[in-house]
Image (tube, rainbow, N blue to C red; front, side, top):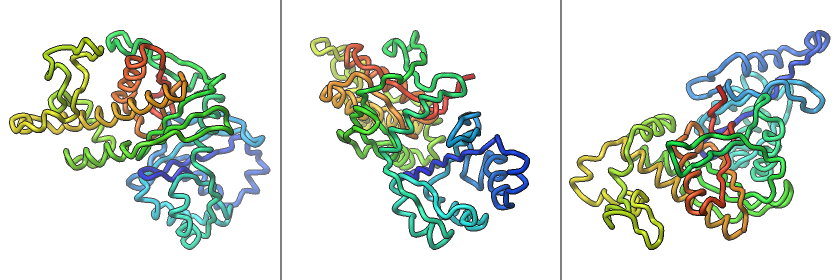
Length: 345
């Protein structure tokens, strides 16, 4: 489990090479838990199993099986622990592997409510090893990693697969509730360069305040329909066109939400416009910081990961454009299929 500030991500390995003898020896609790986790796509009101992300026929610890990916809001963690107690998880295992801040925050709850001990692992170690693992096994025969070719030309930008066979050094930008940026030189040698508190939690929090949206999915749906230029002040709004001396295009954002100081603009802007402007503001800030870190660390490969990118095509395209444009084509933004949840058809 990765227990983050906003979401809990759970990975469950289901063996498929169970022999008839093993199946006969399995206790009822194990059969019940396996059936519950693999037969459902929804758990309660908020738990989701992302069926399209399932990795099939992997060999782990000498067993062949499938990896299932489940997520639910961190605010529902006590309900998950209660389920663990109800299904008697502790009769099978007395410990669960967990990472993220919640592995510390909820440790005592797991012990007292469900009789389970958390085997805590460092989240950045897990992030790097997990990234390298999913890239090595691929996406059921297809590549895991991808980038956008010609990101500065939206009409001709195309998605291309790539590999992390020789990934080091790389800049790893982990966008969750907040953002951590790592310079990675090997799977065991890395440093945290910097971070920012303006991440996915900021986007959802501000969108909730500005639009009244109730979920990340609703916020992104609103943003997809909005026009951020109705809230943001652009270079052309100030210069009447491009700022040619410094290569600033007229369409570049000069002041995020800059139009909102004008009463008439505030009265005409829509909730969708505000959602889009919020998304663009957060994404541009992350892209700017990532680029500066890449230049400072002299690293050309930048990999963006984290739940903020889930079903978030707007941000992946913006990050690709920002890396390419401001580096004159020297930096390429890379993404993972399992992060953006944009599976191959």
